[in-house]
Length: 441
Image 1 (tube, helix red, strand yellow):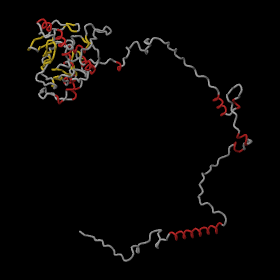
Image 2 (cartoon, one colour):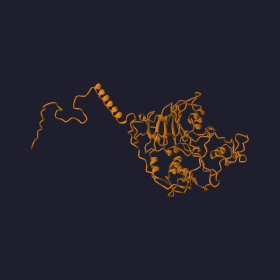
Image 3 (tube, one colour):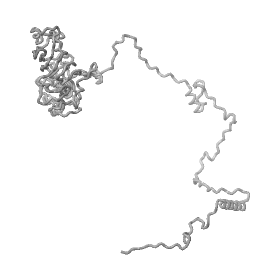
Image 4 (cartoon, rainbow, N blue to C red):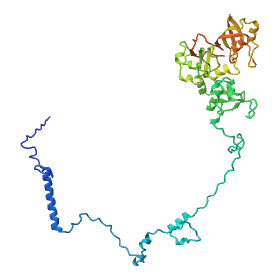
């Protein structure tokens, strides 16, 4: 390998001694400002002297270059160019400046349009009075009449039924919760085959789903009647037809939960009223029973559409059911519901005398509330001041009103069972999920 070493040439004099001077740069020292001004004045004087010697007193010609002119094409002169036109006599200056007199309005009988210039004719036509536009016939004014007078509605085709605005369609009342729907199968304005039932009602009777759930599934096309998809709301079926639902509907129904809560005193069953909170607010992860063995993990989706299936008075405690499943709600609060509900009731006599045998018989059967006879009930003594009630219906404050009718005052009421589901050891104010092996019927 060969290594090259570069040696710096030693400087023998000034740095710029051996270099050629830069172009346009003087080699000597630069003049000062005063010297540069003197030199410029001398050059200007020499230039002016040269101009006087060459041109004398005449101004020097312009140094601007002449602009090239486009070449002219030679063509034979036309006939009209060969003979000069007669020139128009010039008008006096005052006459040129005087404005033209324009008519205020154009009248063909008085003004000859041929004597007017084009602009004058245009202005005259513009200033002429325009013809009056045709008047639209106004609708006759409505005579004052009664406020509720029938007004003619929009014209509709008689061959098609009137369309209903979905914004004005009746909506279900959310405060009702799960309550039996109105039976509209007997309406005379709906033509139907004798003996047929609405599909949603038939599904509710078979225990497939609640009527509200059935309507949702029908709209989504998840319901089949004799292996044919039915997606029109209000469809009717015969009792002998076979109804099946899609797997999506079954999966959606399986995701709905039912909650059992031990309601304490001071909470209402439904919506908040008189400053009292609903028992729904207790369904929180921190209030879930530690011994809940249902296998269901708490999700926020479980709080949606979770409504009470039945009621329990604000002064009562015990088992309260909140559910998302319409089938469970129909079993507990439906018109055909016949689920037993067991209560432990602590009472004391109003008049100081004990309950007679006749009063006990009336509690079991024979009382009326709101003009309706009550269903038979099971009533028995557990101890000197506590009764056990088993009812198959649930009217508002039914047990308290029954006891008042026979001379007893209720001082404590607790619901311990609904159907086959027991309250058990569930602490007050806590909740748990309904297990898969539990059923109310």
